[in-house]
Length: 199
Image (cartoon, rainbow, N blue to C red; front, side, top):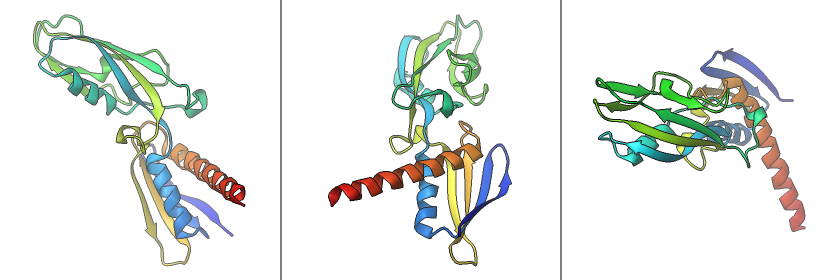
């Protein structure tokens, strides 16, 4: 008999006790929670104007690594795209452009914080761009990791483990766990089906 008990849960981290679950399954869940749960990340950037000293590629990379809030129930993984727009305007005095100026066409899919720096601009410099975010998984690139950490520790009892997951902010920690369990179940069913086809 297996059971799952939440030991602690807050906005950033969750710890659950898995009882009666083998190490192999518990570790598979750990890996899925780290990089197998889909989240949004900026994947394509169309640079309209960039007169800053930062290369287009560097700004695009910074945008890609910004965690974006994600609502999985509203999007299909195979067909999901959200546009975000940034226009620094005319800079009169030196200032840092942050995610507060990155506006999204979607109510939910937006940076987890308004304070993440994107570029430092001097007077006369300007950055205008259109960025496109899509659902992806960390197995493709780390920018799609749903968790910062996903750690499995053993207890003194057999087939009992504690899984701790810390979110990037894209999803609630409990959502990562629940989606991870669904994903693991789906993968096991697919594996069984493939084995059946071999007979």
